Length: 196
Image 1 (spheres, rainbow, N blue to C red):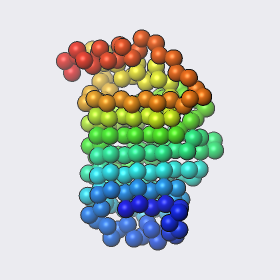
Image 2: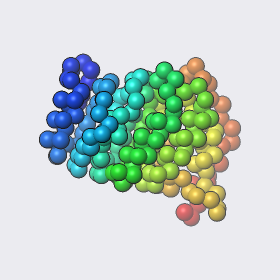
Image 3: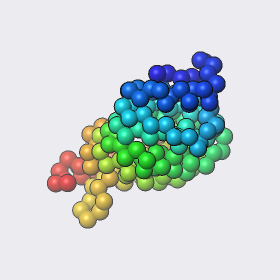
Image 4: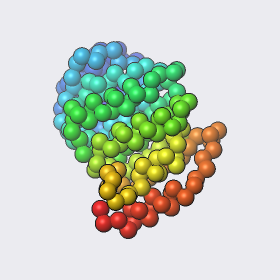
């Protein structure tokens, strides 16, 4: 199922109709503002969800419980007009508490908050609640790459962030160049030779 502002669906009608799709496996929502955070939608068979978010809150994620979700894709449309970045990551954390999913793939695209370090800290804390994550892709995301790589580096005696990670895709914004230090090499070697 694909929902978009181009389809001219009244959001409450769309949300109410989702309850009928219990066997839905793929859901793609593009720029569809949601106004109902008090409802709950359980889609027990859904395995892939794409969510494009513009300048409104992440209300729709608060409605969903998706226990079989394997792939979650977010498109952020840059900086949502000064929104508090914590809301994005709190919505994801609340979603995971409800769904207890074994997410294997997370993709984030077009997120550009002013404070890349703060964004990276919240991102690192949030991805830690998905221990089965095998693929993390950040496309046109303003992230402190070296800080992220340091967090993903395995060191004895510390928590091993994303132990099953096999694919890391990083494509920073072109207007914010990324200068890699030795953190990429350290991260790769720490995962390659660690006993985990």
